[in-house]
Image (cartoon, rainbow, N blue to C red):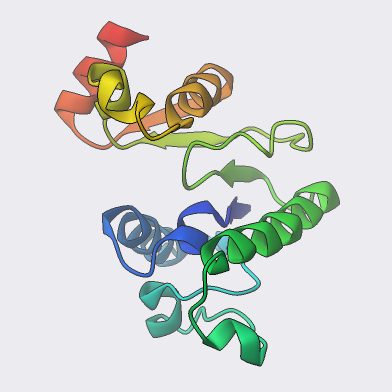
Length: 164
């Protein structure tokens, strides 16, 4: 069996709870003796967990080794393109998006499992509207189309059941 995780959180976080969660989940899945293979189609990333776990993506071109305005956006676009190419190859059994953007829905022919980390966007939408945050829209669509959901805590599960 092959599980593909996407690039989203590894493109946007150098460190953080969500990328650590997915890195640990991947390590856990791969520790089973039943031969489950995990893939993270990330071309370039500054995420410490990927680098420290010998899952380091390709060495970036020289210009990506420097910080500049728009770098995070550029990394995300490169990695999204690479992930979409891998999704189109359809060489996996299960897909795990690592955040809520639903860019993959038009290409995905396999089931996907979505981890819901919290319901902050639903409970406090006024905070995020100020920042043109589209997470709430993506999240709703991702939840509605997922084959299975994982709630990160009992409280998130309760909120998820109440709100959706």
